[in-house]
Image (cartoon, rainbow, N blue to C red):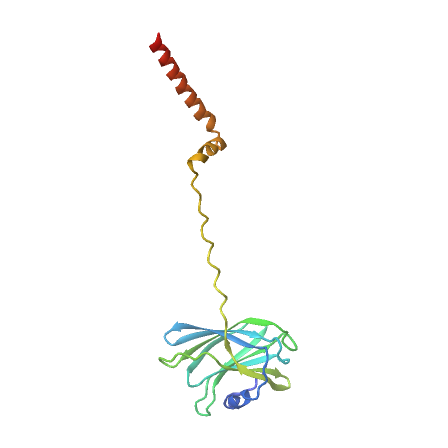
Length: 205
């Protein structure tokens, strides 16, 4: 697949964004530091409500990103990435073309991940310009900025433990009866009374 080089387009996107219509579709990102100025950014593409397209491009600010190191995507996408050109000047970008035939179906699509190296001591701001593209004939159908992916809400706290009531003295007999111990207790009490009766009869004799 032949991708069109759009290095010069990055400089014109700020003006284009002012006239871009609002849409539900977009790209969400999650940025993760790997240490030593290395970063990974994972993308989820949502095509819901977007014009028909089969390709997208995401631009990397040349003042923040020193080098794009990798770009991975699901198997049904053809990918490439281009480093920034400081002489033009132009931002770097990653580009992915859908190989499923025709326009991309509606819905979210994950599995896109880019590794890059930032300039020393600089933390990337996160939001990036993107384009949705029709590859043939080539046309940019939507532009926008990536949005930070919303994290799922935390799980609710566990319910408090149910207190176990301590049986009162009046209910002890019921507890013993339920356990089958009440007849034993009654027999012990009866035996003690019989012993007291025999003792008294011996004294009278």
